[in-house]
Amino acid sequence: MVNTDGSHPEGKAAPGTDVDRRSQLVNAAVDYVAAHGFADLSLRGLGAAIGVSHRMLIHYFGSKEQLLVEIVRMSERRQRDLLSRFRLEPGLSPSDAARLLWQQLTDPRLASQERLFFEIYGNALRGRPEAAPALEGFVNNWLEPLVAAEVAAGADPAMARNRARLGLATVRGLLLDLLATGDRAGVDAAMEEFLRLYYGSK
Image 1 (cartoon, one colour):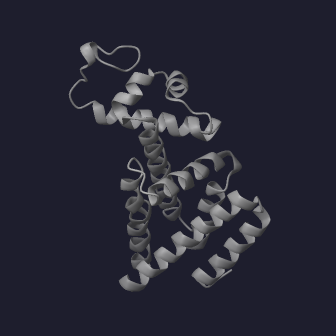
Image 2 (cartoon, helix red, strand yellow):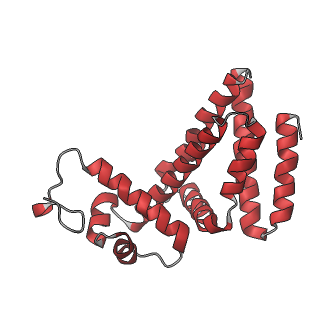
Image 3 (tube, one colour):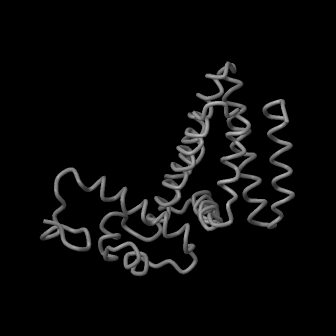
Protein backbone atom coordinates (compact mmCIF):
# COMPACT_ATOMS: atom_id res chain seq x y z
CA MET A 1 0.00 0.00 0.00
CA VAL A 2 1.23 3.51 -0.89
CA ASN A 3 0.18 6.63 0.98
CA THR A 4 -1.22 9.61 -0.89
CA ASP A 5 2.07 11.50 -0.68
CA GLY A 6 3.99 8.69 -2.35
CA SER A 7 5.44 7.31 0.87
CA HIS A 8 4.98 3.81 2.21
CA PRO A 9 3.68 2.63 5.57
CA GLU A 10 6.13 3.21 8.42
CA GLY A 11 8.44 5.09 6.03
CA LYS A 12 9.48 1.94 4.15
CA ALA A 13 9.71 2.00 0.37
CA ALA A 14 8.64 -1.03 -1.60
CA PRO A 15 11.62 -2.91 -3.09
CA GLY A 16 12.71 -1.64 -6.48
CA THR A 17 10.49 1.47 -6.48
CA ASP A 18 12.79 4.15 -5.02
CA VAL A 19 14.71 4.83 -8.24
CA ASP A 20 11.53 5.01 -10.32
CA ARG A 21 9.80 7.26 -7.81
CA ARG A 22 12.81 9.57 -7.62
CA SER A 23 12.85 9.84 -11.40
CA GLN A 24 9.12 10.61 -11.46
CA LEU A 25 9.58 13.37 -8.91
CA VAL A 26 12.50 14.91 -10.81
CA ASN A 27 10.52 14.91 -14.06
CA ALA A 28 7.57 16.56 -12.33
CA ALA A 29 9.91 19.14 -10.79
CA VAL A 30 11.49 19.91 -14.18
CA ASP A 31 8.04 20.53 -15.67
CA TYR A 32 7.12 22.76 -12.73
CA VAL A 33 10.30 24.85 -13.02
CA ALA A 34 9.80 25.17 -16.78
CA ALA A 35 6.31 26.56 -16.18
CA HIS A 36 6.85 28.64 -13.04
CA GLY A 37 10.58 29.34 -12.66
CA PHE A 38 12.65 28.69 -9.57
CA ALA A 39 13.26 32.11 -8.00
CA ASP A 40 10.74 31.63 -5.18
CA LEU A 41 10.83 27.84 -5.18
CA SER A 42 10.40 26.13 -1.83
CA LEU A 43 10.18 22.43 -1.09
CA ARG A 44 6.76 22.93 0.48
CA GLY A 45 5.46 24.82 -2.52
CA LEU A 46 6.94 22.42 -5.02
CA GLY A 47 5.70 19.40 -3.10
CA ALA A 48 2.18 20.79 -2.99
CA ALA A 49 2.31 21.51 -6.73
CA ILE A 50 3.45 18.01 -7.73
CA GLY A 51 1.45 16.08 -5.15
CA VAL A 52 3.94 15.03 -2.47
CA SER A 53 4.95 16.28 0.94
CA HIS A 54 8.12 18.31 1.38
CA ARG A 55 9.31 15.51 3.68
CA MET A 56 9.25 13.11 0.76
CA LEU A 57 11.32 15.50 -1.32
CA ILE A 58 13.86 15.68 1.50
CA HIS A 59 13.79 11.87 1.74
CA TYR A 60 14.63 11.46 -1.95
CA PHE A 61 16.94 14.44 -2.50
CA GLY A 62 18.27 15.55 0.86
CA SER A 63 17.85 19.30 0.33
CA LYS A 64 16.44 21.91 -2.02
CA GLU A 65 19.93 22.52 -3.44
CA GLN A 66 20.41 18.85 -4.32
CA LEU A 67 16.98 18.74 -5.92
CA LEU A 68 17.89 21.73 -8.09
CA VAL A 69 21.02 19.90 -9.24
CA GLU A 70 18.87 16.92 -10.23
CA ILE A 71 16.45 19.19 -12.06
CA VAL A 72 19.35 20.52 -14.15
CA ARG A 73 20.66 17.02 -14.81
CA MET A 74 17.23 15.85 -15.99
CA SER A 75 16.79 18.94 -18.16
CA GLU A 76 20.15 18.25 -19.79
CA ARG A 77 19.21 14.59 -20.31
CA ARG A 78 15.99 15.65 -22.04
CA GLN A 79 17.95 17.96 -24.33
CA ARG A 80 20.36 15.17 -25.30
CA ASP A 81 17.45 12.83 -25.99
CA LEU A 82 15.80 15.50 -28.12
CA LEU A 83 18.96 15.99 -30.19
CA SER A 84 19.19 12.22 -30.69
CA ARG A 85 15.60 12.13 -31.95
CA PHE A 86 16.22 15.02 -34.33
CA ARG A 87 19.28 13.26 -35.72
CA LEU A 88 17.23 10.15 -36.46
CA GLU A 89 14.67 12.12 -38.49
CA PRO A 90 14.85 10.95 -42.12
CA GLY A 91 16.18 13.62 -44.46
CA LEU A 92 17.18 15.99 -41.64
CA SER A 93 20.78 17.20 -41.96
CA PRO A 94 23.02 17.51 -38.90
CA SER A 95 22.92 21.30 -39.19
CA ASP A 96 19.12 21.29 -39.34
CA ALA A 97 19.01 19.00 -36.29
CA ALA A 98 21.25 21.50 -34.49
CA ARG A 99 18.94 24.37 -35.52
CA LEU A 100 15.91 22.56 -34.16
CA LEU A 101 17.65 21.93 -30.85
CA TRP A 102 18.71 25.59 -30.70
CA GLN A 103 15.09 26.65 -31.20
CA GLN A 104 14.10 24.45 -28.28
CA LEU A 105 16.90 25.68 -26.03
CA THR A 106 16.06 29.33 -26.69
CA ASP A 107 12.30 28.98 -26.29
CA PRO A 108 11.42 31.83 -23.89
CA ARG A 109 9.22 29.44 -21.92
CA LEU A 110 12.35 27.45 -20.96
CA ALA A 111 14.50 30.44 -19.97
CA SER A 112 14.16 29.60 -16.27
CA GLN A 113 15.74 26.17 -16.90
CA GLU A 114 18.73 27.78 -18.60
CA ARG A 115 19.11 30.29 -15.77
CA LEU A 116 19.01 27.44 -13.28
CA PHE A 117 21.68 25.58 -15.27
CA PHE A 118 24.08 28.53 -15.10
CA GLU A 119 23.35 29.07 -11.42
CA ILE A 120 24.16 25.44 -10.60
CA TYR A 121 27.23 25.59 -12.87
CA GLY A 122 28.43 28.66 -11.00
CA ASN A 123 27.85 26.97 -7.64
CA ALA A 124 29.82 23.95 -8.83
CA LEU A 125 32.73 26.13 -9.93
CA ARG A 126 32.73 27.75 -6.50
CA GLY A 127 33.02 24.30 -4.94
CA ARG A 128 29.58 24.24 -3.35
CA PRO A 129 29.39 20.62 -2.08
CA GLU A 130 25.86 19.94 -3.33
CA ALA A 131 26.73 21.09 -6.87
CA ALA A 132 30.39 20.20 -7.31
CA PRO A 133 29.87 16.49 -8.21
CA ALA A 134 27.70 17.52 -11.16
CA LEU A 135 30.36 19.70 -12.79
CA GLU A 136 32.17 16.97 -14.73
CA GLY A 137 28.90 15.51 -16.00
CA PHE A 138 27.82 18.87 -17.39
CA VAL A 139 30.56 18.48 -19.99
CA ASN A 140 31.24 14.76 -20.34
CA ASN A 141 27.60 13.69 -20.54
CA TRP A 142 27.31 15.80 -23.69
CA LEU A 143 30.71 15.05 -25.18
CA GLU A 144 30.28 11.31 -25.57
CA PRO A 145 27.11 11.35 -27.72
CA LEU A 146 28.40 14.34 -29.71
CA VAL A 147 31.71 12.59 -30.39
CA ALA A 148 29.90 9.40 -31.37
CA ALA A 149 27.79 11.32 -33.89
CA GLU A 150 30.89 12.96 -35.38
CA VAL A 151 32.71 9.63 -35.68
CA ALA A 152 29.65 8.03 -37.27
CA ALA A 153 29.74 10.80 -39.86
CA GLY A 154 33.35 9.90 -40.68
CA ALA A 155 35.36 12.29 -38.50
CA ASP A 156 38.69 11.28 -36.99
CA PRO A 157 38.07 10.45 -33.27
CA ALA A 158 40.53 13.05 -31.98
CA MET A 159 39.11 15.72 -34.27
CA ALA A 160 35.59 14.63 -33.35
CA ARG A 161 36.27 15.31 -29.67
CA ASN A 162 37.68 18.75 -30.45
CA ARG A 163 34.67 19.60 -32.60
CA ALA A 164 32.25 18.32 -29.99
CA ARG A 165 33.83 20.43 -27.26
CA LEU A 166 33.86 23.48 -29.52
CA GLY A 167 30.20 23.00 -30.37
CA LEU A 168 29.15 22.54 -26.75
CA ALA A 169 31.11 25.60 -25.59
CA THR A 170 29.69 27.76 -28.38
CA VAL A 171 26.08 26.82 -27.69
CA ARG A 172 26.45 27.42 -23.96
CA GLY A 173 28.24 30.71 -24.54
CA LEU A 174 25.47 31.95 -26.81
CA LEU A 175 22.82 30.81 -24.33
CA LEU A 176 24.54 32.84 -21.62
CA ASP A 177 24.75 35.79 -24.03
CA LEU A 178 21.00 35.53 -24.66
CA LEU A 179 20.15 35.41 -20.96
CA ALA A 180 22.43 38.36 -20.24
CA THR A 181 21.48 40.62 -23.16
CA GLY A 182 18.09 39.46 -24.40
CA ASP A 183 19.38 40.06 -27.95
CA ARG A 184 17.61 37.16 -29.63
CA ALA A 185 18.25 38.38 -33.18
CA GLY A 186 21.96 38.89 -32.57
CA VAL A 187 22.42 35.55 -30.84
CA ASP A 188 20.46 33.69 -33.53
CA ALA A 189 22.59 35.31 -36.23
CA ALA A 190 25.76 34.28 -34.40
CA MET A 191 24.47 30.70 -34.15
CA GLU A 192 23.75 30.64 -37.89
CA GLU A 193 27.28 31.81 -38.61
CA PHE A 194 28.69 29.16 -36.29
CA LEU A 195 26.67 26.42 -37.99
CA ARG A 196 27.88 27.62 -41.38
CA LEU A 197 31.48 27.40 -40.24
CA TYR A 198 31.00 24.17 -38.28
CA TYR A 199 29.22 22.22 -40.99
CA GLY A 200 30.67 24.02 -43.98
CA SER A 201 27.31 24.91 -45.45
CA LYS A 202 24.55 27.46 -45.16
